[in-house]
Image 1: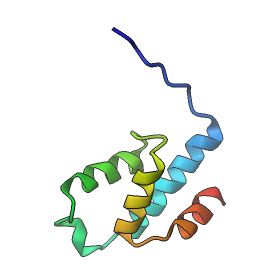
Image 2: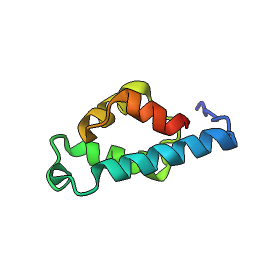
Image 3: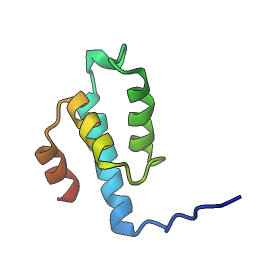
Image 4: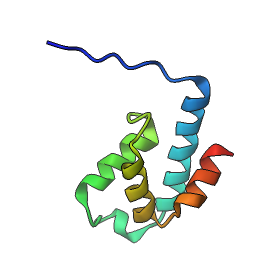
Length: 82
């Protein structure tokens, strides 16, 4: 059996993830689709990102989530790296 060990996140990476989670929570607040999402797995993916269970989500995951909550990648990048 092979085990993969993840390198611990730096403080700046952790803070960036927290900002991403906060931004996504704010973007989906009050969204009607949240109660019956177009893709059921999106809800769990969002929760994992927002709570830090996915500390470094893949680019295409972030792009899909940003699209689903109505954020442009430019706006997302600007808010997360500020």
